[in-house]
Image 1: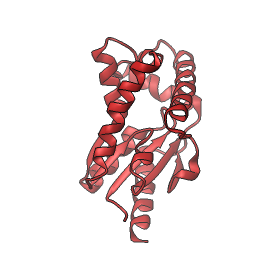
Image 2: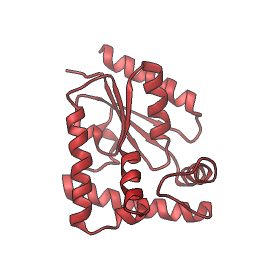
Image 3: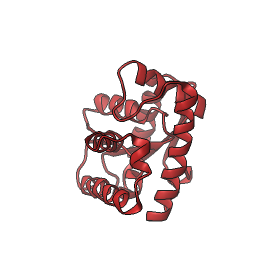
Length: 187
């Protein structure tokens, strides 16, 4: 049975959180971001997101299990938009959306956010530094989730829809996602 839950995964810097917030607002749904939770956990430990990804396996697994348990618990609800690398896996009857963007655009977006409003537990002094950190983090997360759960988080065949966000602004991406969700829910 299809749920009134939208799970959004994708590339780092692809606009998952911004898109999730826009969709949640348009639908009157609640929003949850596991990325925000990871950044909060990193901040509480006085660590960067990159440093928390580099923790020993045991410490990282504890954090992953905590976040993943929260996601599994959310599967019983509804009227929810979740941006998370693995929510699609834990909530298979959700509408699963994948957002992707090229690495250069991702680094530019993240750097602009750091300079503008700030980004909890993430910093960088140049676009090039952000891009290098993002590439490292992508490799770490890809291998971590493959090892922990046997899930390739970048296999787009697992998703109901996929959009490239590099050439589309947020309102356009949100509108496309809403249209895809409504079509999915009606079928």
